[in-house]
Amino acid sequence: MENLKRASALCRQHGVPFFLDAARFAENAWLVTRHEEGYRDRTPRQVAEEAFRLTDGCVMSAKKDGIVHIGGFIGTNDPELAQKCELLLIATEGFATYGGLAGRDLDMMAQGLTEVTEPSYLAERAEIASHLAHRVRAAGVDIVEPPGMHALYLNAGRLLPHIPAHHYPGHALACQLYLEGGIRSAELGSLYLGEEDEHGNPVKSAPYELVRLALPRRVYTRSHYDHVGETLAKIAKNTDQVYGFRITDQSPILRHFRATLEPVPNRS
Image 1 (cartoon, one colour):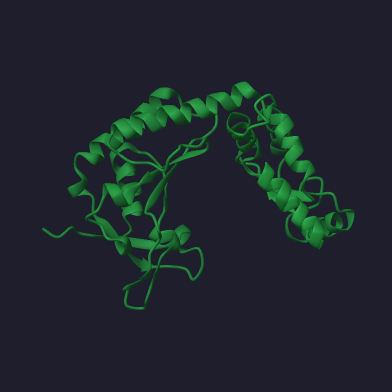
Image 2 (tube, one colour):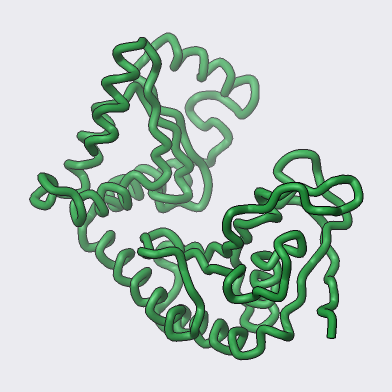
């Protein structure tokens, strides 16, 4: 919070609008109440309110701390900017009263934004992340420490040292998770952040080869997360059977969303 206050003051000093990415404002507020001095007696809602008061507005993907299937919003205390955003919304999505979202989704978002700062809800989110982290460590797989609340990040590079960065060990682990256990995940490594030349030779690799296991809200039971741990344990015992990949087609931007890849057999 101290960093947020200083950033806000700096922006005010130079006349720069200060906007938050509020996708996980409630989970961040919960962590503040657990780890920052001076906030342990505050509620997550009180912390969030203080954070928003320091800003000129926010952008939010409501699929996160809005607890809704789809949608998001821009919030601003600048009437002129709000009008410009509304005009652009009408031209690209729809009128301000719906903006591309059904009334049902707007109702769910309003309810989700109310429920998301409840301490009991956030405590359960933190507990289930801790439980999954325990199961993953027991499977012999390293994660980024400490675990947060919205996801765990598996260290695929450490688990699969036989797969070089330009053959995307994170993507390889993500594929193996799906093949072995039907578990969907996302690579956050050199497929996302790396670069190759026109011949496929690596130019830049990611600092870490990670796989993100995002934790959906109010969807899975503890036994589902136990299944994740059991699947990872099985993979960790047979890492030599996990192979890398090479790109066969990619888009010029955000290639990890749309790239086509093929397997690269392991050398004997």
